[in-house]
Length: 193
Image: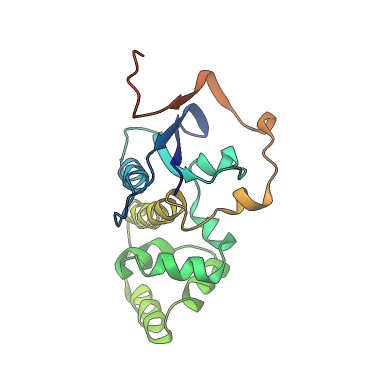
């Protein structure tokens, strides 16, 4: 098995400040590779303000859109196929899901409900109907948790964002902070900076 390449993007808002590429030794029969553990750890960090970090395993010779590193909105779920939705839903707490769906368009709600067991969907609809008014902060928190699961799966290569498969990688359409850098990092070598 070959080494694994992880691309990590650091930024704020919709701006990429820095991109780093790190090479990890191929897993040696471990359940989780070091690259996947690295991605899971970084992708679970909560940074202050509008700063963010996102890491993902990149496949060799496979185009990777820079947009796939930018923060995503909750309606990204509309672009996923049913199997991807089901994979995410298996990881989501029903209370978080109920809160996250409040105020969402019917197309998104229908897609989620269609990909749940019938009884679970009926129970969630009923819970949402009788839910006390939910503060916007709790709605956003529910959505953040679901998007965190989505990004985790994208990061370890178990889901692919539509941007990776459908879009040309035209760098002129991407905004980089002044002085943004791309750096290849090999953790097996000593670096002086």
